[in-house]
Image 1 (cartoon, rainbow, N blue to C red):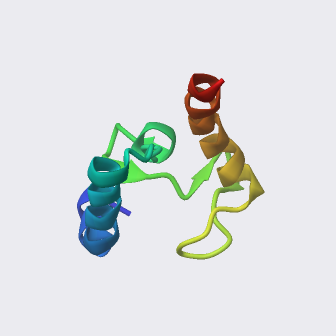
Image 2: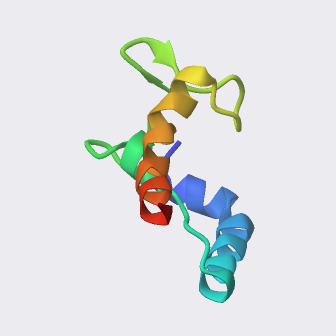
Length: 79
């Protein structure tokens, strides 16, 4: 999926998350950092022949593990 398609598809959700960040100070993990193929500006569906998703919207354990590193800064800053 291209970044443009992702942003269009998730426009409402992304706007709610940004509003919550401004109003409540929540941390948002930028999936682009973990799942974006910068060579062609699309999101990976698989890496090294390992699928990242169980369907069109939900990460499998391999994809979730990639994103889990995004929590490191959040957990470390709270201690």
